[in-house]
Length: 141
Image (cartoon, rainbow, N blue to C red; front, top):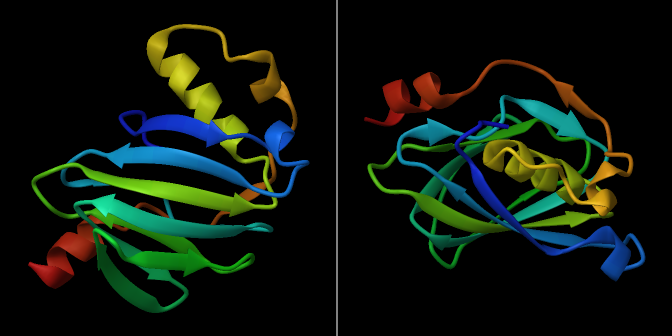
């Protein structure tokens, strides 16, 4: 995850018996989310403000406020904010657990210790490639 991504965990694994988590994320202007990766949980990205471009499998999908992108478990995916303004989205993960990584990153960014619940195991993420930021900027502008 990029160090300048801002996250707020809204629903934790412990609050949903491990079924679902919800995290609000803000991606700064002209920056990328995580590099191309895959994992064994589903992710739904609901765009609140701005625009994000997703690579899900071989497809590219640009989403703006009110639109949803879905990355099913096992699918290679990444995201980019190619605009000059931040983008804000809700991330829904099922099953839950990966919200702990966002809480750890937020604590690190603030120079604090993560909350005890964030120290529980995190689902494995397999990195498949680099950030897609340059590819997206070169392709669509």
